[in-house]
Length: 55
Image (cartoon, rainbow, N blue to C red; front, side):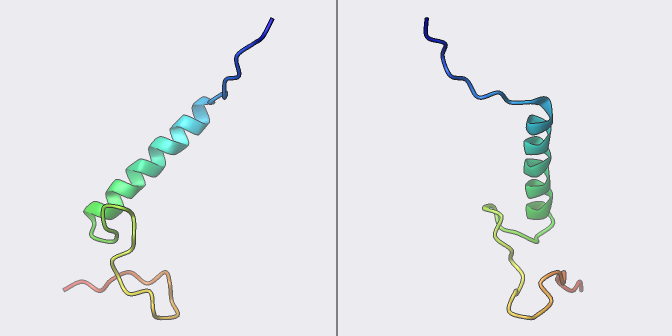
């Protein structure tokens, strides 16, 4: 008897994926990334954690 292979997804994995997509949406709506998650601010400086300056 063959048993079909299934990938077990735990609730914590699903919760983590949901949180990642929420974070992506927040970063996009905040203007820090484009729709694909690419940062929109300049990363050429040495401080990669610097947020864009406000008005």
